[in-house]
Image (tube, rainbow, N blue to C red):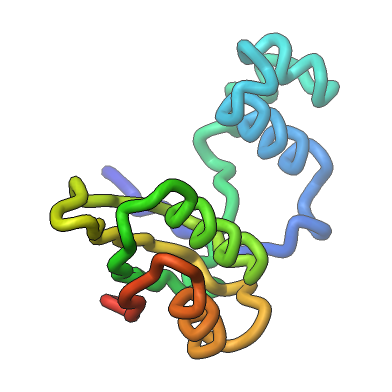
Length: 146
C-alpha cells in the first residue's frame, strides 16, 4: 500500500531547531559552501544520521508568485559598452537578470533579449523601460513577455 505524501507550508520559526539545521546543511551543500555531508553536518552541529534521516523531507519554499519574470527585447548599436550600460540600469533598478541572449550583430546592430525577475523593482516597469530606452546606443526597447 503506497500512500501519497501530504505537504504543508509552515513558518520556519515554529519548526524544531533540528529541521532548520538540516535545511541549512542542505543549502551549504547546494551552494558549495560545504564540500560534503560530514562538513555540512559538523558546521550545523547535527549528526550525519540526523541529516540523512530528514534531508528528503525538508525543502525550502520558493514563492514563485513573489517576483515577476519579464523578458525584454532590445536593439543596440554594435559598440563597446552598450550592453554594459544596460546591465547597469537593471542593477540600479534591482531587477535580477536571469538570462541574456544576443544575436550576432549585423548592419551595426545587435538584438538582445534579457529576462529578469522584477519583484523587487525600484519603481514601475514603465519607468525602467523608459530608462532603458534613454541609454546611449539603444535603438529600441520593449517588453516581449511577462
